[in-house]
Image 1 (tube, helix red, strand yellow):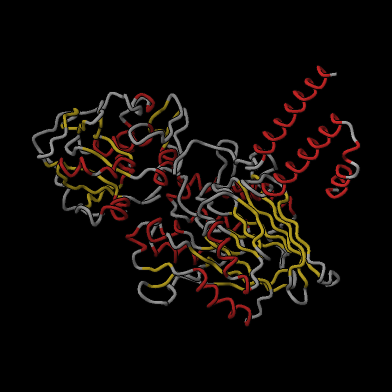
Image 2 (cartoon, helix red, strand yellow):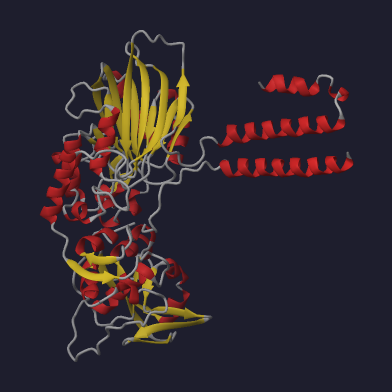
Length: 580
């Protein structure tokens, strides 16, 4: 069609009237601009329920073919129930069954996979230390999962327990005992499964950032090795064992997997499935598919492969992202019953307080940041000057308007963090500008002047004085262990929040940057509590609730270009009318 249009414009072009020639040129430009944007922006951004891949290699025979369907989720983070009209595992199961998936079918053409971070989130998952999640995944019929960084949140012993509990393998091929190339004892590198007569090899990878994106108290005993080296070590063994088609199931970002797919293109890997972070995507990289869904049970990846049964060669493939919208399908009642039973067993519905409006992690000294760190210093009756913790991944949800229960608090701060105390001079504190990105209470800057909480009131920071701070152990282990010493109080950070919130009638009155600070301060008694010799544990993003961004990044450019052309046509036609 493009050559044909070019020929019309070029053939005998000079014979056309001036006005018609101009119109034809504008039409030609419009067509080619649209073609340009459509070509280069079609797969950018997050895609909603739309085929973004469709590749066919007709060199293979279709007479001996089989169709395999991969259903992939990642970063479930224990979101078993829907929130804000999105997600939930019963709804997931409804969609999977609508696709034709049957968890009881032997030698199924479906593969149900998870890209890691099954744990850590809402109360039922967190307080059961992942047991509830694995129980639900067993009921759903998962074929395999990989180890994500948050599988380490409850300690290595809990990885062993969940591995034993699961009816499916939990994989990773790049976790080694520290200082060696020996795979960690809990680490199963790959599995070989037969689906509709095709031997499918699935190999796991865990993000190399796990050392600091999980708690270093747990991860310091392990090395998280190079992805390519792990694949090159294991995939030949998988092939020798009979793997005809290979899938990489990874808790790694799509950008990491795209680079990896290019680097190992000679290994003939059909699919790279990701997790951990980045923009949800389904895209081609060479002969491979790279895909990842949105987190917290909001979305899943569906990939269909047409495979030559004799050779294992993939000769056609399609892929799409499908939103798990509450109400979009009939939820599976059996799965929901399992979830309800676990919710009842955990029983975290006790009402602690109330908020008259939604509260988000809006800044370092307001919103959730203010409430949580206020709780730290309030717990010790303001005998310590300030409180510090990490934001971003440290807050995993927001407080919704209405009654606030234990479950709501756990959902916001689900990690296994203890509080630590430390001493610091005013001079050093003023220079520690890296505290500026942290959630904090008891510290304030007005212009160039610094103020600090002392006995429930703010006073100017004195460079010559010694001050005491409270910090969650996770950020201390990650960022400050080499900067200052700290002592573990043995107090879980969530316990201070429970205590503080019970004394507040409305959280919304105490979370703003202009709040009346320390409203519950009581002068210290003559007796003191020794917290310096007690013992110690978290981790990593609370944001405003958002729906999946399904707009292609190029659509705005196309719209603007077309609008400019339309306006130009209008102005041109007006001028020509006046001339005529």
